[in-house]
Image (cartoon, rainbow over all chains, first blue to last red; front, side, top):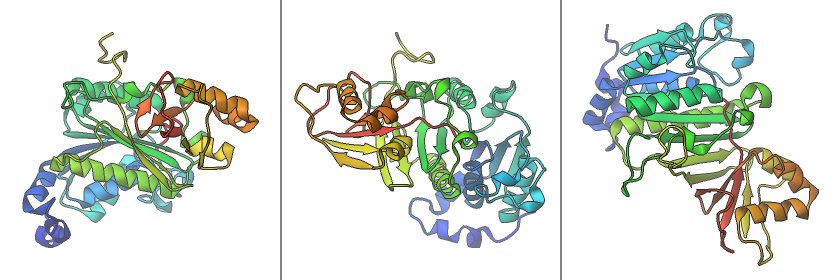
Length: 253
Length: 82
């Protein structure tokens, strides 16, 4: 059942020259997969569902815990102990009942991941661990899916987009998560380091912006550039990242 | 040379940026890191675990990258939280 006149609902999008009627149609036709429904996944889902993306997949095997609420504003006290995917779906439909939402109660490192990713156009990595990010990265390379990836800890966060299956204007492959050469030992997550909720909100909001720009086909995006932000100093930089010829996924050496 | 520090490195050093004079024999990022570590114990605490990225003039670089005197060097950690 369609609720609300889409011309009214998306009127502020339709005013933007970057979106307009054509862009709104692109959003409506898009299929976006959000993996991880924590501090990053919450703002991502809020803006992606509000923006009118027609089909959204949600992946998480976790239940809502009271320690989540300071940074995961899509949940409330009544959700504690319930599965995040079901509660997140309810939240998204409370904003926008016109969109389709599919839920997957699983972890990304488990089997079957590839078949889920295959079904979507854009993948958003909001997971909280290195192994999941590696697995998602490798599948997105093989399945040729744009991957909007972010991570946070403390007051700090980073965002980038991997289109690792494509080449830059010089014929060099675009970088992937593998090219950052992160070790298992570098694992730093919110459970061990803490996280300021609003910083996850800022980084997740940038991730949502980037996913929408990917759907709209905007060229001025984060492919090959890592945006880093420190909420303590307010320093922000766009760091160029390059394909590593020695990387185990698509290196040549 | 301008140095900017993010997250844990900023926290340990207690500053987010500084401008330093580096001796002429400092050629690479590795030389610079070694110089900083020998310079002051707080740099040793911030940098000795080698668990950080270095960007020179907003480009991610390896430890053998040759730096320029006017470069901006950013040091930031890998993070995986979500």
